[in-house]
Image (cartoon, rainbow, N blue to C red; front, side, top):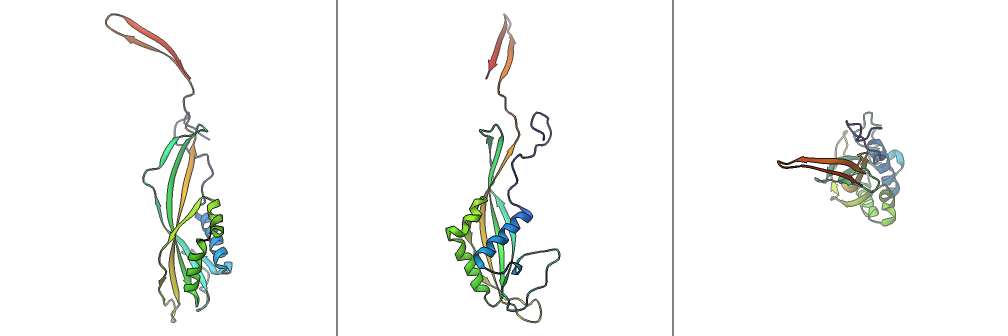
Length: 193
């Protein structure tokens, strides 16, 4: 691992936050926990090889992250571990599309259940908090020859991203300051801890 003494690019020393597959798997477990839908009927949106669409009337949900927004000015400073710390807040939207005969009920259940503290504990344990929900929008669609009942809702989450970088600080400096004026030579030895 490199640090600032070697020059070049630095990588963080802290474990990465949940992201990509790990974040999507985590969101799957949250949605499953608060809706009680079967795991096979909770699906990530935009899959490369999606499974077949459930029959019309079957209750299921598709979810995906559609927007990520970070604070414009992250905090950076040397911390107590003598590491350079980077902190910023990130908002992200989880777009949930509920299908089936009870799509409105499931969208409402997700929204209402996430405001119960015990239901949001798992998210808080990984540094994610509920910021709020958008409106439930009823938008039936025709993917085949029949209308599929559908309700969309956006869950807005926020989290803090923290990373530490191995930027070394000066612990002590020893040197000599020399200055030449027109009339004399000035020399001062110093040591700073």
